[in-house]
Amino acid sequence: MFRNNPHNAVTLGLKYNIICLIFTMLWLLLLPVSVSAHNVTVFAWVDGDTIHTQSKFSGGKRVKNAPIVVYDVKDVLLLEGKTDENGMFSFKIPKKTALKIVLKASMGHLAVWKLQAEELGEAESKTAAQPTGMKTSLVTDSDSAGIQKNVDVSESTKMSLGRREIEEIINASLDKKLRPITEMLADAMNHEPGFTEIMGGIGYILGIVGIALYFANRKRNR
Amino acid sequence: MHISEGVLSPAVLIGGAAFAAAGVAVGMKNLEQKDIPTVGILSAAFFVASLIHVPAGPVSAHLILNGLVGLILGWKAFPAILIGLSLQALLFQFGGMTTLGVNTLNMALPAVICHHMFKNSLKTGMGKHTVTVCAFATGFFSVLLSGIMVGLSLYLTGEAFLPAAKLVVAAHLPVMFIEGILTTTCILFLKKVRPEILEGDHVS
Image 1 (cartoon, rainbow over the protein chains, first blue to last red):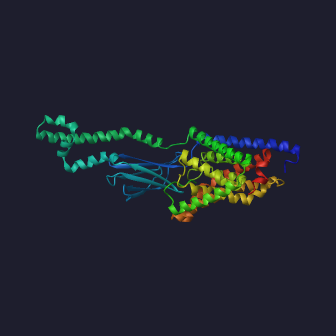
Image 2 (image 1 turned 180 degrees about the horizontal axis):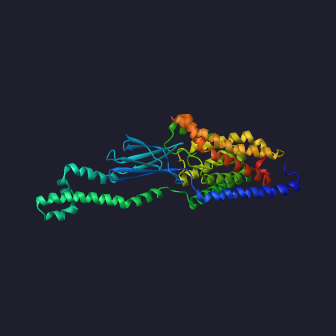
Image 3 (image 1 turned 135 degrees about the vertical axis):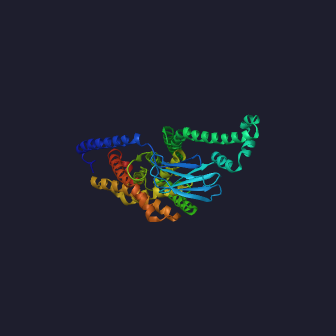
């Protein structure tokens, strides 16, 4: 309609150019704060006898009140829970096997995190050492053997008790020291598409267009 | 809007893939040589749009742009969206390869429906207001319908339909308005600069 009147078209054209520009600018302004989308991730780590999980949308937004389900290796349901306002959910280790932690965010989003049995091993040795006592710890731990060779039986009891305590203290302080790192790792798990991915995708599309044009051309020239 | 892997039942996945394949076949049949660059550009736009995250709303949502793709391409939106989604799944880990069919169907079918509802508004001789309203409606309703279809996919897997659909639609309400405005802007711009893209031959 506005193509019929050339004079009108010029002024209208200007107006639309300006509007388009404004929208493009708005669009670009939106970009840097929010180059992300809604893929969800769940990250879990062991702290003592507790497992912490953190759930996020890839924009960094925490997944609130989303159900988390924990399975063992054979897909047997162990426990269920919900993330809190910060997307966190913590629970005691339910079973000393590899665990599969599934986050069921709304709208068909799902993320899985697998905890290996070795990651739970630390907690396992701690709880397992308690009932079996110092004898096993004496036998199994080659590191401490050197120290314990020189001491008699009564002293070795004291030593092994002390050793267990030391182990606990080390574990606790390690957990404390490593917490920022595990949290950083949790953040890093949030794989955001970068420039490479975007340009790569556009490149693929251009390539597909090229191939399609090539075949279409060949068909026409035949 | 992308449904992740492992959420839907195999029946829904296979059904979705079958319908999507049919849609892609129709699109490819309509595809002529001169359409190829347009399809490519819109596919690229669709691919990148998913990175633009709309910070409003209860959950994280992003632009989809299926309305614009559908309005211009019609059935050819199916191959364009399929390519866009495959690359999003491969490079961005949105959705997944097994849910590709369902996701394509969920985003492309509303686009085609809106195309058939509103395509007449793009022909020459239509008032500017009509074009504006129809382009906005395309952007708005294609996202709305996609949301309903995501709800439907989840329902067919065993979730309650109304809460699921309501949540998806509510989450995408800001997106619907933004897409309406964006689609209008793009269509008005194209109508001024390259009106031939919007007319005649692309009716399918």
